[in-house]
Image (tube, rainbow, N blue to C red):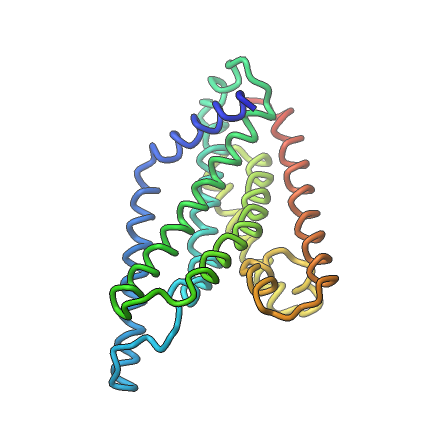
Length: 248
């Protein structure tokens, strides 16, 4: 565990050494401000009221952030820590340390997952603070927090898929392109082919909708949980196998 923790700390420092991830956090906060102000303006025009009508901004923004923006940032983080390092050979310095490859792999994965969680919390906090400023209260704070925490699961699986793709090529630009294309294809397939919608993990990016007040039977929920677990195990096992034997 000590080796994994050391690698994790090092990889996280690498990620936030890229100024773009700080910029992304700022951009997300600005998007929250613009989205909430636009929603408030629409309410003012239609109803003449300065009240957001008990709508949680954090929850209403989840489609944009959980389905689009945060997956993009997470896949970029994976490409920076995997394909980019293999491409410019800096991974050799990592492998020269007295550490097993599985610890390096775990450290990189956890660093990207942490980046994802930080982005989620940034959106949650920003939207909640705006609700507090505009309406004087935060609507359904426990529900919003639970929803964001639950949606970490499909995002973690997306990261695992991106890591696997990054083992197949050494060019970060190509890796990012492949990750985006595959993600979009899976999303569209799940949307336009109903029989695939319940089988693809991309159909559950807003995982909280199944678990919070949906009324779905427990047996069905457990079936979906095993499905997601299967995706996570498969992607991580295949990704680590390729990472372990990949040449620098």
